[in-house]
Length: 98
Image 1 (cartoon, rainbow, N blue to C red):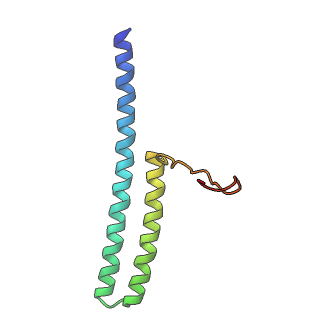
Image 2 (image 1 turned 90 degrees about the horizontal axis):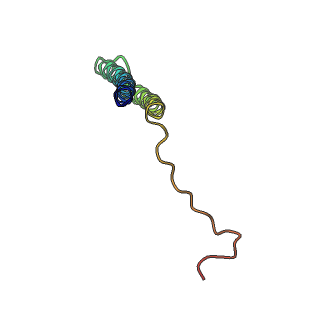
Image 3 (image 1 turned 30 degrees about the horizontal axis):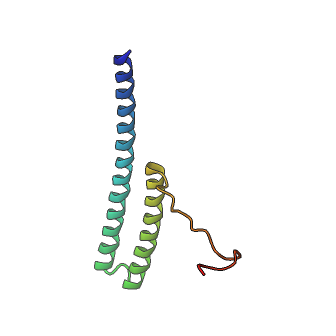
C-alpha cells in the first residue's frame, strides 16, 4: 500500500513539474518575442524609417500589451496570490477610537 501511495505522489509531482515547465516556456517565448519587437523598433529608428515620437509611441504600446499579457499568464500559472486583508471601515459606526 505504501508503494502505491509513493507512486501516486511521484506521478502527481511529475505532472506538476511538467505543467510548470510548460508555463515557464510560454513566459520565455513571450519575453523573447517582446525583445525581438523592441529590437525591430530600435533598428527602424536607427535607419530613420520612423521618428523618435513614433518609436516612443510604439514602445509604449508594446510595453502595455506585454505587461497585460504577462500578468494574465502569471495569474493563470501562479493564481491570484494571497488576497489582501480588507480593513473594515469605521464610517457609520459611531466614530473612531475615542
